Image 1 (tube, one colour):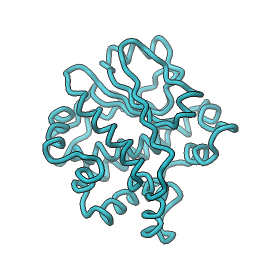
Image 2 (cartoon, one colour; image 1 turned 30 degrees about the vertical axis):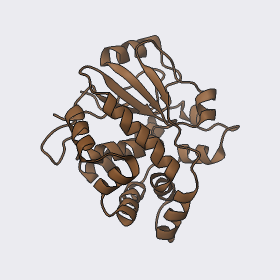
Image 3 (cartoon, rainbow, N blue to C red; image 1 turned 90 degrees about the vertical axis):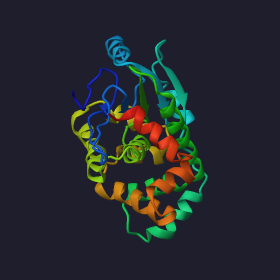
Image 4 (cartoon, rainbow, N blue to C red; image 1 turned 90 degrees about the horizontal axis):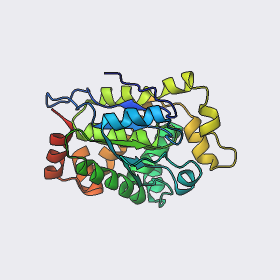
Length: 250
């Protein structure tokens, strides 16, 4: 099955099925999609997603972004507003303590997100919805604007929770950079001159290896292990983690 789904009206839409895990299982196909903006989906694209089994759409964008570029609606899926921003600010402080100028621009932002109480609340809701996506032949799509940062963190968290190797997670993240080379409409959609300039800069900055490794390092520094982060920050204990693996791997 294709990894990159070039559906009309979508940016950076990708299949997450097929990745192997450390447990010897594989992420199921037709269960999980990551994406950027989906405000311009065409009828043909909607037909594809209906056949795919889409039931849940999780929107990580800010309230302003959701209002100005509203997701395409349909009767076969429900959209859940789950803004990652604005952060509370405590994540910035925690990231600053361990950063010391060692991480990239995006890496510092990503550390702030995963350590911030509001960012954690946003991804907690995401994981809760993942647990509800437990019926056969139904799937969940999560997205932001570029499908790189807020979505990239979401993909990192769920893939690592399911046991995917860090190297594969990193390669999946960096695949987003192909979007900047091939999509001629990206500047018009993601670089809004009247929008939040911090978000604009983030959207238009290509991903880099340090961005992902910095997240792993921040979580290990403050939580000791990724499993402890899942439990303490996202309320995913051992039982819920087992449920997730049963739903999304085979």
